[in-house]
Length: 288
Image 1 (cartoon, rainbow, N blue to C red):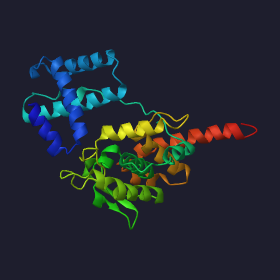
Image 2: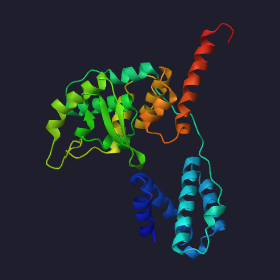
Image 3: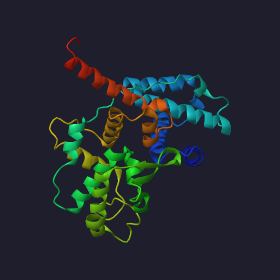
Image 4: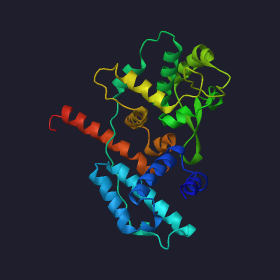
């Protein structure tokens, strides 16, 4: 049953591998609560399971995802005839809080990226990754999936395969191009192995880089900047979006660059910018 559900998520829903793993983990938790008995799955057991999760201190975002997983699973089981009805229809939707993301200010971003380089392959790779993350606002999974041919140096754009396998082209500036060229000419050739394939960014053993390595590189770099928040690669995405809006980019363009399906997702960055605008107003205006 779990195997069939996994196939449904991957092949019919076309969900990302990350989402599939999260849903299967959620399903394992639910089935453990039911002692592996599908005949015990009803609205009461679903609410009891979610209440236990809440009592354990699970974050609201986690509860929202687990609610979504439960509703998807019960609907699937009902369609397959494994459940006489769909109890998930009676389950309320948990709303994840829309908190303002922490971001770098422009001076902190500049300090993090303008460090002297020694020319070591790891430094060249990390510099190219950070420049590209900040220049484009792409997701860490999108960065890891980049191939060498996805970089169009003539037009200064990269081809990105985002959520739902939607392809988009994202422009980047001169510093990111120069960092990429240094990595591709002086760093990547030293790490290429027979199994490297076309991957743009490599690990020390020559394989395609993984998200954990990118996160460690970002955390390590930001620790060198005094007063900088400890951000993940997604924090650089937030920072890029915020700085674009602060620089005068319209919301629709930022939505396209980030690959958001809905403009509502992009609008959270306007709150960050307005927050800073209020702070500047309070500091500068004589009657604030």
